[in-house]
Length: 382
Image 1 (cartoon, rainbow, N blue to C red):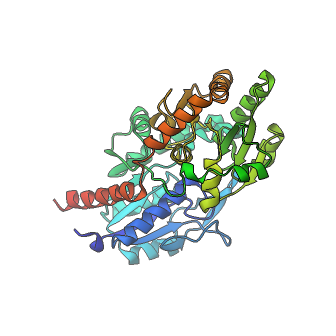
Image 2 (tube, one colour):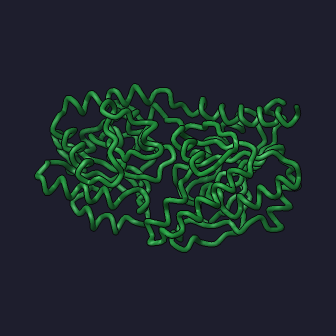
């Protein structure tokens, strides 16, 4: 089968109504596939004011707000209107991007019609409830996810550590890798801008310990704040730079009152901000890959990250930065202090990270998904 003969239906819990790494990866994938001649149609909850325009044809799926995260929406299955739309569309492959109600209903629909299914994993949903006082939901979430991924023909994970985790859960479906890419022109050491830093009150000789991402509790904001407090208690000179926006901004700002908040940045403004960091601190334990980590590395910024899924596949401990036990505030502070006090180490780790990030290219990683589609169709034909 040629790509131009392929019709794919993509089901997403969030395609463009809130901006995050998962849906940006999906939109880039759809753009790549459309460019290769594949016919695409996307089914997802929508809002009147989405975060960004969708790539490709987007069909609305009825949804409600998630109780403990009202900025996100939960698709209410596959009711008549979107079901009739996908039936008229007649896809060759159904691609699922989340183990939610919509994803489960789409699998049932595909199986009933004999259509092969492929699921891509983007988010460690099972880790989220604990950040909102609902830790008892973790085990049920793992059981639901395991059943979901065992119901499809192929699973694509963004990193080897996520594949290992699924196997530990009991997923027996064949697993492949769909990694992530970087805009290497945008995320580059050459975009470092000392004048921009000065405009924020960060001196040329001051070390900016930085956060990049959506400001939500599950990104490890609590640990970040505790480590900043530990550095301050030790008298370690530094500045805190926070790039991003989200519902936990006010909470976070109270915990790190001396931090500089840039708000949401995009395009080359984002590239400038990342290159202008000195240490990138990522304490999140919920990552499946870590797009922001590779962006920081590409920009020549050393990384201190949790020794958890995603980061363990990206950070070469002691070379491009440091990996730390996820909740060890003292160890985080030790690693960051070491980088603050040793400019030569900071420079060497940043350069090593820039080199290590070069293989992550969007066209290359998205081409791998098309290869998976075609291989799945060939296996059905055989």
